[in-house]
Length: 95
Image (cartoon, rainbow, N blue to C red; front, side):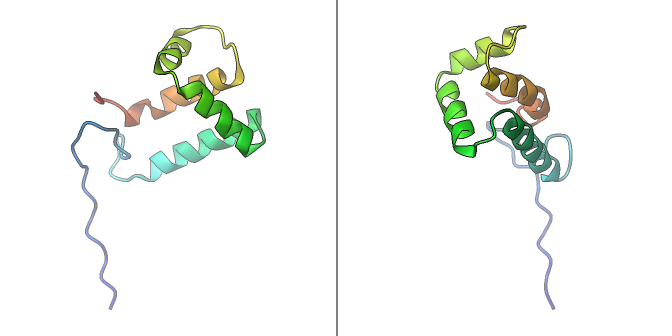
């Protein structure tokens, strides 16, 4: 007889939580998959998409600055603006 794993509890810490406002991590993974799919609509080649995101995210100051801008100067900024509100629920109370 196979035993089921005990329910996973919300860990406390200073990093993001995969739970958000739910008792499961499923919503987080669905959200990340949806962001990846929408990002691939903007930059179809996975290697180029990853390179662009890596290059763009090297500067945290630039990330924060682009989130505050009303205009969207480039594709990666557009992806960032789309992803930020969707992922905010998972990064509340993060230092």
